[in-house]
Image (cartoon, rainbow, N blue to C red; front, side):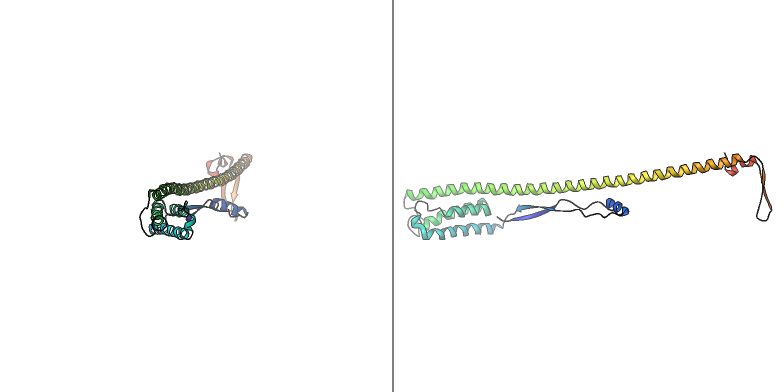
Length: 246
């Protein structure tokens, strides 16, 4: 029985955020490996092909039996068993039953009783025909059950592989989100440190300015570059809101 194959990828490459962060840091990012799980999936042949195989296998069994029929009196159906089993495995229970019935008819016509007639010469000739028909039908049913179980197992394996693939994708996406959150957290921490440094510098500058203002005890006069009078500044003016004093 032939089967198709479904390739299910298991991994994908790392997230863009991780690649961007590594690119900024100057480190090379090796591509992640990816692989596939190949799941064999049996598929049904066309009905005409399945029944044609059943007929062909039965005719082949007859052709192999005819030359050695005198030596197979007690086991005349020995070469028809593979034909029935092959038909059941390849095409299912319908072609297998067709192969069984066709085997009985061909054996009766060419090998048992009067040659060239579909008649049973004696009840003793009828027994092997009925036994073979019953046993071959049972084997066909069992073989078809095995075939169906194999098909269901392949379908379940395909579903499991697809589910595993989806879970892998979700895990990869979650990992990417965690890495992105980590990068954003590091950037936020760095921004917080820079803000703290600038705040400390501003406080130091304010303290320095207040120290200078507090050190001025006497008023003075401000002139421009041409020695023209601009303003008279006193301690009271320096402490006003105009100069930003507090």
